[in-house]
Length: 383
Image (tube, rainbow, N blue to C red):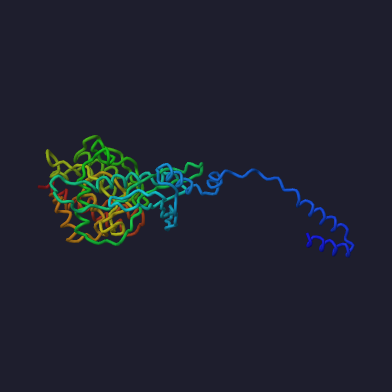
């Protein structure tokens, strides 16, 4: 209080009574504590200070038996989502017994819009990548696919959603023979409940996107074969892309000269023991979506659906598959007759999609594919 009375004497000397009164009043008020609201419980206070994403992560970790979030570190972003690396107090273990960290994607948009298709696709790839053919006695090569732990909307009433998957230490592309063999193992995996296809159909659980282009995936009938695949690809792949492209020349070529005769390209794949069986496809396999993790080949950013395994190679022109890759793949899946012609068909889908995304010369490439397919069909009919 010495400071107070010193101040009081100064202002008294200055004969400033109003200021003296103010200072006395201020000093007296210090003896009466201000009214305050009772403090929030500790857990409520912590929750109130967290973002919707952090609240969602804390709730998920606690309910999953992983304890609290220990670290949540920003790990970049894209034009549509933000990424984080997250560790928990009581982490689960991976197949090698090592503690798992998590890779989290978040967005201000709903889970149905952003992450459901990706999550279901990764879950199917995770299941199918572990398939072991009956005639393969050794473990062989398989894909390293991150395990999905959770996906959904924020529960706090805020707009947004998130996807939680296993964090992989991704590295560059390495052993192409191993990659080819691992892709073949995934393609050979039979449809199943665990892989999200209990009825052995073509299509997928949800529509998704290839790049930024919508990709419709309606299921075909149960136990589908070659005819169902041809109709699926005709309508929901080439036909869909042509509708988006709006090019009258390609559309007429397709509708008049190719689509009515398309089954001719699949004659070698019809009948008992020859029918096309649904294979799980990555769907957008090019060099930018190929890498490795933990010494194993890895593929990511998929546009997953169940289709003809040959359709996987429609992006070969920018995937740089060499002899080692094909040796690995063909060690498990041999090449069928007519593959070279059908390869043009599957290439046309991706050329059209690239035109719809980027414009430019991709349309000319798609036209060349379709014209070559027409010529092949003309020769087949002529004799």
